[in-house]
Amino acid sequence: MKLEEVRRILDGEVVSGSKSLDIEVAMACGADLMSDVLAFIKQDALLITGLTNPQVVRTAEMVDVKAICFVRGKRPGQETITMAQKKSIPLLLTHLPMFEACGRLYKNGLPGCSEAE
Amino acid sequence: MGKDDGFGRVQELSYELKVGEVMTTTVITVAPDNRVGDLRELFRANKMSGTPVVAGDRLVGIISIEDFIKCLADGEMDCPVRMRMTEKVEVLYADEPVVHAIHKFDRRGFGRFPVLDRKTGHLVGILSKGDIIKGLLKKLEIDYHEEEIHHYRASHIFEDILADKTAIRLKYDVRGKDFENAGASASALKKTLSRLGFHPQVIRRVAIATYEAEMNIVVFTPKGQMLADIHPDHIEVKAVDKGPGIPDIERALVPGFSTAPEWVRELGFGAGMGLSNIQKSSDKMVLKSKVGKGTDLRMTFFLYR
Amino acid sequence: MKLEEIVHELKMDVRSAGRNLAREVRGGYASDLLSDVMANAEKDYLWVTLQIHQNIVAVAVLKELAGVIIVNGREPEPETLAKAEKEGVPILVTQLPTFEIVGRLHQLGFRGTA
Ligand SMILES: Nc1ncnc2c1ncn2[C@@H]1O[C@H](COP(=O)(O)OP(=O)(O)OP(=O)(O)O)[C@@H](O)[C@H]1O
Ligand SMILES: [Mg+2]
Image 1 (cartoon, chains in turn green, orange, red):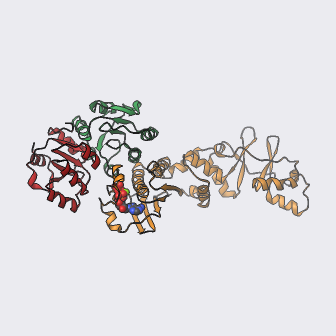
Image 2 (spheres, chains in turn green, brown, red):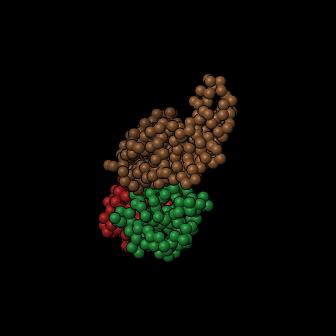
Image 3 (cartoon, rainbow over the protein chains, first blue to last red):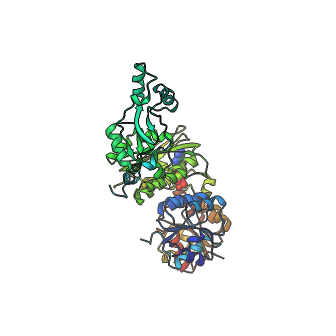
């Protein structure tokens, strides 16, 4: 699914990396605990999370996450944005809570990490 | 060794890189008519063991500290350099691949070679083993410290390159409670491994385990250190700290066990999954800890499992 | 929809308070941060999380949640289960990750926004 479509489905906005909206995410993972992200996520995934600290970007970098979407309208600070720009990881923001964001993307055909091959 | 296999990239680079790209271009030279006696100060001040002799732009010889000492013994310090220099000089050309230079160092045992431009015959630089190592690391965009260069020297990088094997050591300091920079070591190591051409699957395993170990130092200790030894067929990462230690290691290894305080949990850590992630990602994990003394965690990753 | 229908539909395992499955579920909340759930989850919602710590029970009780789904095949700690049993908080487990179990709950008609 193209990032632009993710943005549209989630009625979201691009926080950084607006030039990357045509990249593809292959699957999604919703989590707030970074060790769980490290344990279960596969590469080229979209990470959906309620946390906005720079360690989220760091974690994403470790496992080659394609893009991050912050939920519940929580806007990341400059540190996080700067780090994401440095690592070329686009950031999206949606006002929806995690449950609704995951539900809508799943309904539109984006698989989870255990389903995607 | 293929492109994706560990040190393949270093070997490749030794063919790709030209002597002219890694040599030192500011060369201290002497003229044939200089007094041998004047070399004393030159050698001392620049910590050199020899220097090219140049007439105009042309290399006409090389004079070494041994030549100087002989001259001194003969009491002929006023003798011109011309009379004492070695005229038949082994040189390298700027357009030669670095691997030629490595072979030449290996065969001749010299410390440095003058570098000439093949067309004009002019002296354009000088090359030492250190220049080659720095050049290779720079090309790989590996951040190195002088101290590490010595380590490479000591570890016979050239013999290793010739024998198709090399070891590189990377060292990172980790500060406790410094959330802003937490993960910087894992990030740097990951970058280095991809530049060295390791397989993405291996890089991922190393990155996950290193990051978890680093986060534990950040969360639970005042400070520690990460050491990565990169070998052609395996990678070893050590995470050591002088923190509070782990009272019950078996318990700490249980997935879900965590003593992380609430503020850490609010940052997305403290799920108690770190050590089991490390266990899953590495091929071998040895965890040693003494209460009040610190923790020593070693992780080994084999390239071919 | 009642909790027991959801358990059946999504083939989850019940780990505690099986007596309280007749409860009507109004929506869902997915989060691994207790403070977030405390601040934002709603009464009679199902909480989807990776957390297995016993504190999840206290949060579920306080917020009058319909139950807790633990994902990724993780097993709640024994203290968590004991507490949940005592407080009557149903704890369910699934092998699926958050994204997928939430996707299925959404397909059953549950929403994350009031
Ligand atoms: N370097 C260390 N020094 C002292 N204690 C440690 C160290 N590393 C781990 N521990 C102890 O072991 C426990 C388990 O560590 P582990 O990495 O598995 O989980 P965590 O760090 O608590 O949570 P997570 O890694 O999921 O964020 C920690 O909670 C801590 O008590
Ligand atoms: Mg940890």
